[in-house]
Image (cartoon, rainbow, N blue to C red):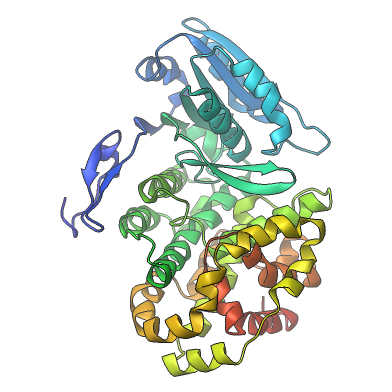
Length: 447
């Protein structure tokens, strides 16, 4: 595999290979990714090639069970000992990836040979976490092209009212019935599309962080995600018309986005500053005991708009201007974090992880600025392109489109950087005072 070759990542599943970009050995433990019509009828055969044993737990919620879980149970019963577990909301309007569901799932999954998750992000993350805990395989059957967790090696869960991302063993397979996911609620399809647009900005954030901190970086995740993205990124209008070809391409892009995280060994190539804004909004809702504002991906789309504005602002600056802005900006971090109230200790612990590099920015950033612009800024789309892509797919473009008022939008932009230890473009922008300019645009109705 040479650096300019088109990469067939599917041929590398369950294989170790040498990377043409970072020259390290990568391994993708997933054995199968299948997208096709009437895939649900092929589940018994496909599982027989993937799992030893006959005891299968089918995990779903009341909605996804009606959509596909009942059919999965029906086609598996002839050859397998099937135990369905249908999750119902506990104190909320719908099921979330909350630790309160884990004891029930763990109890049902005990002594099973595999878990088949039938659902979207919530069911997938719960199933992956439990399967990892019990050291049994998990197979994902998506009911919507809504996010990239199907193939990723992480699970995002709400623990102690704090959203955390935990490493888990990836799924053994993702089996997708194109007819089923094409009939998913449009907001879930839009969410997957908006979430996929984060890849360019997440990889740019990751590259900047690697230059500043010395952490490992690999361009392969960006390359494979971009090759897939090119098939659907400007076809948002066809997406909302439920064009199966475009939705299939989107699902492929989401699967490759998850695989990019496996290659990296972290979520960096799929989650940057734009994701922190979505996580912040989720955390705020949970702190208040309220329902989330919108599906994760739709919130990420707004975060991508914010990131695109930041990159547009920064790319015209010279290293001298960067040095000047950094030298004139002083932030009282303790004062800023008071916003989180009783959760300050947890947030502070995360933020402290990146504080050493933040304190060195006045020294590091100006000297590396030209290289950062060449190697990171070149990866992202323009603000205008992002707005056009999202508009075509009829995704939310403004905070108030998802019920976030102006005051909370201000906090989402300026406080999201504190909730994770990962260094992102939000940190640079705040240290230079750029986030204040973004907030001004917000007040003027430009965001």
